[in-house]
Length: 288
Ligand SMILES: Cc1cc2nc3c(=O)[nH]c(=O)nc-3n(C[C@H](O)[C@H](O)[C@H](O)COP(=O)(O)OP(=O)(O)OC[C@H]3O[C@@H](n4cnc5c(N)ncnc54)[C@H](O)[C@@H]3O)c2cc1C
Image 1 (cartoon, rainbow, N blue to C red):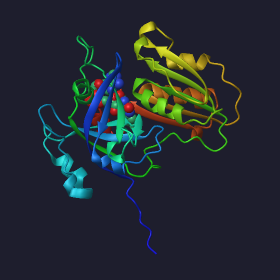
Image 2: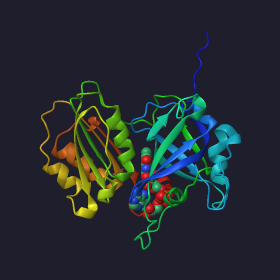
Image 3: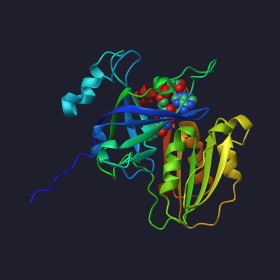
């Protein structure tokens, strides 16, 4: 007997189906394409690598025909040709979006629009700019999961967890929202979500027994560290924390949870989603 081992990740060639503004800082882009038939994910904080074209290119340049050699081939393309690669989160997967066949599967990705507003303090990155202009028919490549349970899902509360703590800024709002949707009824959760504007606050669906605090920077809410430090947490023997967002914030929160709250560091999942002042290429070059 032979055992087929399916590759956990593959390229999906997708097109924008529609976009919807969720608030001042967030736009939801819905993608479709026949390739989605092979897309599998258990959701939660499922991350993806998204490849985007430069302005004026009809499609992102990635030499997928090279098979396993695509990475080397992609790196060797000229800077102004090589597709822009960025990390994003699967916000939702609908297998049968139109209620007829699997051919109509769709995925949603929620993009933070940073730096695109007139007079922005820092210029937009290419992904933020792309998302602000996205239109139906625009082509992208996604390096995403073909196996539902894969290593790009990091939210993994150990067996017996009796309290879930979540913190995320707006880049981690899609992941935190999908995590909340996945929590079984009755799970105790304490959640802090940080956004720029009150208009970015969303209604989140969950069956968990979740207390959600929104921290709105524009309204001078306390910092995440102050809010979490001051919070009285319900008693728990086996808490599990998931924190994701700007790397500096993630580090200080992790330090607080482990050193000041005494949470076992193996029970804290932390992911830097972006770093103030550095592009994703610069972070990759530094191995972060
Ligand atoms: C696992 C993972 C999942 C992620 N999921 C999402 C997601 O679902 N939605 C999402 O919007 N982002 C998500 N991110 C973050 C996203 O990859 C980064 O914000 C990325 O830098 C955006 O690329 P860019 O081309 O717009 O900016 P870049 O070219 O990478 O950066 C340009 C400049 O903008 C700054 N910058 C980057 N992001 C922000 C921001 N949010 N606010 C203010 N300044 C910023 C950088 O520090 C840099 O100075 C995720 C990251 C990871 C690692």
